[in-house]
Image (tube, rainbow, N blue to C red; front, side, top):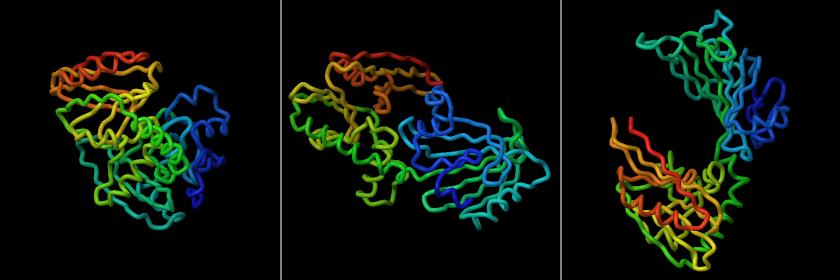
Length: 321
């Protein structure tokens, strides 16, 4: 199992880490339809010597690398939860973390995880979870799963330079800022991909955020300083370049920008009060801002953006159930 640092296996086939989802589909001889799926599931009779039913692998996009591969373990009867962990331990050594849980009786045993274990090898983590009883899957009865995860900051390194170059081009456009309209939010926004970074220094936080951006949402760029310094966390802006070549929407940290005239659909969302209080949102793909339901500021910003050539505003309503 030491080759987990090299890639993940589908049967005997090793798919090296760094392989994009599209490349993996072609390596495995799958049809074009597989390219449209975020997660690809295939039969797999074993996982590094363990009896298995299937493997599911996924990545952020077709042109981004696979980050996770999950194997559903087959129910072969007669094995205790600890026996599965012992089988992995014999190959990888003692786990970095292991925890056991007694079924409470409040939930079916097949839905209750009774053992978790984690191993790390280089930039790869192997996690295992075993249920209190076998549960049904599309491919048969499974006692639990083993998942390989490749560290996303390492996976992102090949994509960072191009993303940074796009950010620099946006900053050059912002240097000729011609018009900016600032709107208020009832709730402060936060930097995208800033999770799990508390306790790290500012430079490390920024680098990790940028790596995550380049991997998961390369279309969301860092907000140019000419715009960011005008915004508090509770504000966002819609702006244009003096050349008239682009328009953009920015929080203090994150920006979506488009050439003027390029067709783009913006989602204007109203979640109406029900069990919850609801909210208003403006969504441009993975970029979004939210405020109290019925926010006039969100409505005004949508109206401004909708005035740009090529922009279509789609309104969505639902209840906050």
